[in-house]
Image (cartoon, rainbow, N blue to C red; front, side):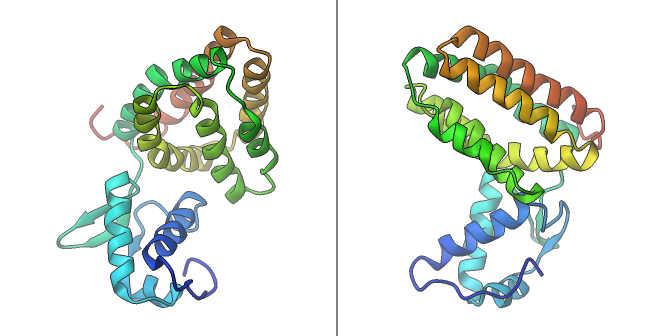
Length: 215
Protein backbone atom coordinates (compact mmCIF):
# COMPACT_ATOMS: atom_id res chain seq x y z
CA UNK A 1 0.00 0.00 0.00
CA UNK A 2 1.44 3.39 -1.02
CA UNK A 3 -0.70 5.47 1.32
CA UNK A 4 -4.32 5.80 2.44
CA UNK A 5 -6.93 5.23 -0.24
CA UNK A 6 -7.89 8.44 -2.02
CA UNK A 7 -10.41 9.40 -4.67
CA UNK A 8 -9.11 10.39 -8.07
CA UNK A 9 -10.35 13.69 -9.49
CA UNK A 10 -12.76 13.23 -12.41
CA UNK A 11 -10.47 14.98 -14.92
CA UNK A 12 -7.31 13.38 -16.25
CA UNK A 13 -7.28 10.23 -14.15
CA UNK A 14 -4.17 8.98 -15.93
CA UNK A 15 -2.24 12.13 -14.94
CA UNK A 16 -3.47 11.76 -11.37
CA UNK A 17 -2.36 8.11 -11.24
CA UNK A 18 0.93 8.93 -12.95
CA UNK A 19 1.85 11.64 -10.45
CA UNK A 20 0.70 9.55 -7.49
CA UNK A 21 2.84 6.55 -8.43
CA UNK A 22 5.81 8.74 -9.38
CA UNK A 23 5.71 10.56 -6.05
CA UNK A 24 5.49 7.25 -4.17
CA UNK A 25 8.58 6.00 -6.02
CA UNK A 26 10.60 9.19 -5.59
CA UNK A 27 9.81 9.57 -1.90
CA UNK A 28 10.73 5.94 -1.23
CA UNK A 29 7.27 4.58 -0.38
CA UNK A 30 7.58 2.26 -3.37
CA UNK A 31 10.99 0.60 -3.20
CA UNK A 32 13.39 -0.35 -6.02
CA UNK A 33 12.45 -3.79 -7.32
CA UNK A 34 8.96 -3.67 -5.79
CA UNK A 35 6.23 -5.18 -7.97
CA UNK A 36 3.59 -2.76 -9.23
CA UNK A 37 0.37 -4.74 -9.44
CA UNK A 38 -2.28 -2.99 -11.49
CA UNK A 39 -5.23 -4.23 -9.43
CA UNK A 40 -3.61 -3.15 -6.15
CA UNK A 41 -2.69 0.29 -7.46
CA UNK A 42 -6.15 0.75 -8.95
CA UNK A 43 -7.79 -0.12 -5.63
CA UNK A 44 -5.50 2.21 -3.69
CA UNK A 45 -6.15 5.12 -6.04
CA UNK A 46 -9.83 4.26 -6.56
CA UNK A 47 -9.60 4.08 -10.34
CA UNK A 48 -9.94 1.39 -12.97
CA UNK A 49 -6.92 -0.54 -14.21
CA UNK A 50 -6.82 1.39 -17.50
CA UNK A 51 -5.26 4.66 -16.19
CA UNK A 52 -2.89 2.59 -14.04
CA UNK A 53 -1.75 0.64 -17.09
CA UNK A 54 -1.20 3.85 -19.08
CA UNK A 55 0.67 5.50 -16.20
CA UNK A 56 2.99 2.51 -15.83
CA UNK A 57 3.81 2.66 -19.54
CA UNK A 58 4.70 6.33 -19.21
CA UNK A 59 6.84 5.66 -16.14
CA UNK A 60 8.62 2.88 -18.01
CA UNK A 61 9.43 5.39 -20.74
CA UNK A 62 10.95 7.81 -18.21
CA UNK A 63 13.05 5.06 -16.61
CA UNK A 64 11.33 4.75 -13.24
CA UNK A 65 9.59 1.47 -13.99
CA UNK A 66 10.64 -1.70 -15.82
CA UNK A 67 8.13 -3.85 -17.68
CA UNK A 68 8.45 -7.59 -18.18
CA UNK A 69 6.05 -9.78 -20.21
CA UNK A 70 6.43 -12.48 -17.55
CA UNK A 71 6.80 -10.57 -14.27
CA UNK A 72 4.80 -7.44 -15.02
CA UNK A 73 5.83 -3.97 -13.85
CA UNK A 74 8.26 -3.15 -11.04
CA UNK A 75 10.07 -0.12 -9.69
CA UNK A 76 13.43 0.12 -11.41
CA UNK A 77 16.43 -1.07 -9.43
CA UNK A 78 19.32 1.38 -9.42
CA UNK A 79 22.70 -0.07 -10.37
CA UNK A 80 26.12 1.38 -11.14
CA UNK A 81 25.63 1.20 -14.90
CA UNK A 82 22.46 3.27 -14.71
CA UNK A 83 23.99 5.81 -12.33
CA UNK A 84 27.12 6.19 -14.45
CA UNK A 85 25.07 6.80 -17.60
CA UNK A 86 22.79 9.38 -16.01
CA UNK A 87 25.52 11.24 -14.17
CA UNK A 88 27.82 11.26 -17.19
CA UNK A 89 25.24 13.25 -19.15
CA UNK A 90 24.41 15.48 -16.19
CA UNK A 91 28.10 16.29 -15.69
CA UNK A 92 28.42 17.31 -19.34
CA UNK A 93 25.27 19.42 -19.58
CA UNK A 94 23.84 20.63 -16.28
CA UNK A 95 26.71 22.90 -15.11
CA UNK A 96 26.90 24.49 -18.56
CA UNK A 97 23.15 25.02 -18.60
CA UNK A 98 23.40 26.77 -15.23
CA UNK A 99 26.29 28.94 -16.44
CA UNK A 100 24.21 30.03 -19.43
CA UNK A 101 21.21 30.75 -17.21
CA UNK A 102 23.39 33.00 -15.06
CA UNK A 103 24.78 34.82 -18.10
CA UNK A 104 21.23 35.38 -19.38
CA UNK A 105 20.18 36.87 -16.05
CA UNK A 106 17.61 34.18 -15.33
CA UNK A 107 15.64 34.22 -12.09
CA UNK A 108 16.50 31.60 -9.49
CA UNK A 109 13.52 32.28 -7.23
CA UNK A 110 12.12 28.79 -7.81
CA UNK A 111 15.45 27.27 -6.78
CA UNK A 112 15.39 29.28 -3.56
CA UNK A 113 11.84 28.13 -2.81
CA UNK A 114 12.82 24.50 -3.36
CA UNK A 115 15.56 24.80 -0.73
CA UNK A 116 12.94 25.74 1.86
CA UNK A 117 10.88 22.58 1.28
CA UNK A 118 13.02 20.02 3.12
CA UNK A 119 10.97 19.18 6.20
CA UNK A 120 11.34 15.41 5.83
CA UNK A 121 13.04 12.81 3.64
CA UNK A 122 10.14 12.46 1.22
CA UNK A 123 9.95 16.21 0.65
CA UNK A 124 13.75 16.47 0.41
CA UNK A 125 13.80 14.11 -2.55
CA UNK A 126 11.13 16.02 -4.44
CA UNK A 127 12.60 19.39 -3.48
CA UNK A 128 16.05 18.30 -4.66
CA UNK A 129 14.50 17.43 -8.01
CA UNK A 130 12.82 20.85 -8.28
CA UNK A 131 15.98 22.67 -7.19
CA UNK A 132 18.17 21.20 -9.91
CA UNK A 133 15.51 21.80 -12.56
CA UNK A 134 15.22 25.44 -11.51
CA UNK A 135 18.97 25.92 -11.98
CA UNK A 136 18.99 25.06 -15.67
CA UNK A 137 15.46 26.10 -16.67
CA UNK A 138 16.62 29.57 -17.74
CA UNK A 139 19.54 28.45 -19.92
CA UNK A 140 17.85 29.61 -23.13
CA UNK A 141 18.27 26.30 -24.99
CA UNK A 142 15.00 24.32 -25.23
CA UNK A 143 16.75 21.17 -26.46
CA UNK A 144 19.20 21.23 -23.54
CA UNK A 145 16.28 21.64 -21.13
CA UNK A 146 14.41 18.77 -22.79
CA UNK A 147 17.39 16.42 -22.49
CA UNK A 148 17.98 17.29 -18.84
CA UNK A 149 14.26 17.02 -18.09
CA UNK A 150 14.37 13.53 -19.56
CA UNK A 151 16.92 12.56 -16.91
CA UNK A 152 15.11 14.06 -13.92
CA UNK A 153 13.16 10.99 -12.87
CA UNK A 154 16.12 8.63 -13.12
CA UNK A 155 18.39 11.13 -11.34
CA UNK A 156 15.83 11.41 -8.52
CA UNK A 157 15.66 7.63 -8.23
CA UNK A 158 19.45 7.48 -7.95
CA UNK A 159 19.35 10.21 -5.30
CA UNK A 160 16.87 8.23 -3.19
CA UNK A 161 19.08 5.14 -3.52
CA UNK A 162 22.15 7.17 -2.61
CA UNK A 163 20.57 8.60 0.52
CA UNK A 164 19.64 5.07 1.52
CA UNK A 165 23.32 4.13 1.31
CA UNK A 166 24.68 7.26 2.95
CA UNK A 167 22.30 10.01 4.18
CA UNK A 168 24.32 13.08 3.18
CA UNK A 169 21.51 15.55 2.52
CA UNK A 170 22.84 18.03 5.11
CA UNK A 171 26.14 18.33 3.24
CA UNK A 172 24.30 18.52 -0.06
CA UNK A 173 22.01 21.26 1.28
CA UNK A 174 25.07 23.35 2.11
CA UNK A 175 26.39 22.76 -1.41
CA UNK A 176 23.01 23.77 -2.84
CA UNK A 177 23.09 27.04 -0.92
CA UNK A 178 26.58 27.82 -2.22
CA UNK A 179 25.57 27.05 -5.82
CA UNK A 180 22.47 29.21 -5.54
CA UNK A 181 24.40 32.09 -3.99
CA UNK A 182 26.92 32.07 -6.84
CA UNK A 183 24.11 31.99 -9.40
CA UNK A 184 22.17 34.82 -7.78
CA UNK A 185 25.34 36.91 -7.57
CA UNK A 186 25.90 36.49 -11.30
CA UNK A 187 29.05 34.40 -10.90
CA UNK A 188 28.46 31.98 -13.76
CA UNK A 189 31.87 30.32 -13.79
CA UNK A 190 31.81 29.75 -10.04
CA UNK A 191 28.28 28.37 -10.20
CA UNK A 192 29.42 26.05 -13.01
CA UNK A 193 32.31 24.70 -10.96
CA UNK A 194 30.33 24.31 -7.73
CA UNK A 195 27.54 22.41 -9.50
CA UNK A 196 30.01 20.22 -11.41
CA UNK A 197 31.78 19.35 -8.16
CA UNK A 198 28.43 18.71 -6.42
CA UNK A 199 27.29 16.24 -9.08
CA UNK A 200 30.68 14.53 -9.28
CA UNK A 201 30.99 14.13 -5.52
CA UNK A 202 27.59 12.48 -5.22
CA UNK A 203 28.26 10.19 -8.18
CA UNK A 204 31.66 9.12 -6.83
CA UNK A 205 30.21 8.34 -3.43
CA UNK A 206 27.13 6.47 -4.59
CA UNK A 207 28.25 4.50 -7.64
CA UNK A 208 30.85 2.53 -5.74
CA UNK A 209 28.16 1.27 -3.35
CA UNK A 210 25.60 0.26 -5.97
CA UNK A 211 25.23 -3.22 -7.53
CA UNK A 212 27.59 -3.53 -10.45
CA UNK A 213 25.72 -3.99 -13.69
CA UNK A 214 27.74 -3.31 -16.83
CA UNK A 215 29.90 -0.24 -16.37
